[in-house]
Length: 484
Image 1 (cartoon, helix red, strand yellow):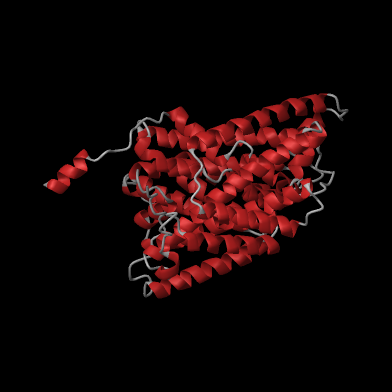
Image 2 (cartoon, rainbow, N blue to C red):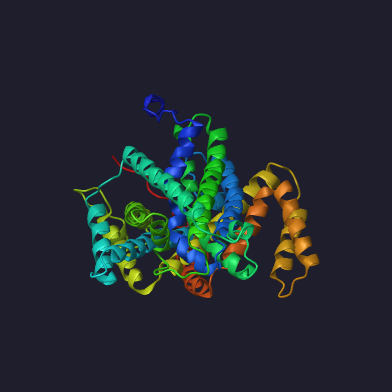
């Protein structure tokens, strides 16, 4: 009785976040400058079709965001791909999804170190890239060991500052484009489709990387207990955030492609957008470069502590050696060992990986999680609760995938595959999201496939041994709650 009374009288989170608050939070997490860091990689990989790749990725993410939003209704407090898949499909499949998420968390701080070091080297070329990489790697780890946290107010101010930089870029771009001679209508349509450079495999490969611009929207589901009407608003905010970021990103890179045509090479692919901004208006070279440096600095720090907390959760559940991974520094109240461990891995990776390959490897894991969430939403809402037989939509899914995997295609085959995808989108949207994410995953580079495949094989083997062939208790991939 006393326990029940204590629970009922304990303070609870206040439901104060409106739909607009949730959308603003999502935009802040993803960042309004999201496509700028990866612009050069997308342009190089997609033969200049950056706008098209971002819009295709947006469609995939809209379906996935819809699935995330619906699953947040069923699991309003747990909210993760690992939970959704493990509960709705199978604990072993949930484990595989969780292991792919570990890959994301480990790679995120790595690519942020790479980008920050590349940009700092552009600003100060006398200082070698390797020195900058060591500097940022040590700073990330040192600040996270201190337990420094960035408040929501600071995040909002940063987002406002980034929004102001984006607005200034648009004005400078409009002035530059209007004063530059061009060859008519084709000049304005080339960013979407350039017949001389179009290659479907290249565009799909770049689209697989473009997913990076949207990663983070799933964080909205963690606010379910603080949102007004969460069953409605979490879903709407997740989908609308992806849409807003997608349209804003497409406009940003469209202007960039008009300023710097794909036929012209960049001095540095990883920091290409800063050169675009400098061409539009010379002072913007430093302004945009510094803005992106700050954005990636913040993302890198947040990603590192997130990875450290994830490893702490695994150590606490004895999935990893508890004596190292499952301990917290008594003074700073942070998993210090894990911060140092993740920092060391990220720094080592910064010396052997490019930004583009790191982004593809990160998306390798993210797309596995996205496919899992889409399938979990299909099982829950279209099979269990919908009362429909899963055979026909699954057959259509297999048909679409089979036709698109054929080595030779005709307009008839592409038409049938497209019609099947349209049927899935109207009938069972989660399966449409699954199919699109599958093709983005399939079109990652072979290097990403090799490294990602090795990571998954190691994880599955480890999990099978740890759980005696997945018969025992599975590893807990959930992030542990913040402690006051």
